[in-house]
Length: 135
Ligand SMILES: [Fe+2]
Image (cartoon, rainbow, N blue to C red; front, side, top):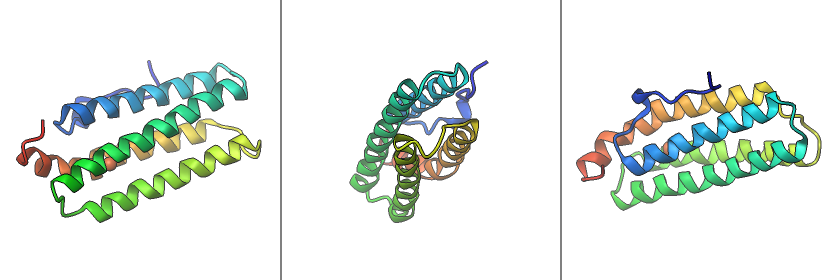
């Protein structure tokens, strides 16, 4: 059983975004597995860096579509993205400088954040963007 299982209820009904969300779930599972297996800081750090990069580019994708279609709650949504990006980049910095060991706490934090964001905030743009023809 993976640390984090994708559920159909996470689907926002837009294929490109669902695929990116699934990739994030997969990366988080890889991070978890690497920590659980006691892999060294290099290996764990690489996965963490990959996850940060992917998250940033995924947020950019969502923001591009929200802007393109004049999504009315763009500002609030963007704030949430910026806040997570900052938290994760801080974590990455701490990890790089050896101030923090990545722990299950971090895994659980990221998992909780992803679930809440996808099934709360992202779900709010779903009907709007789909009405604009996105699928
Ligand atoms: Fe989002």
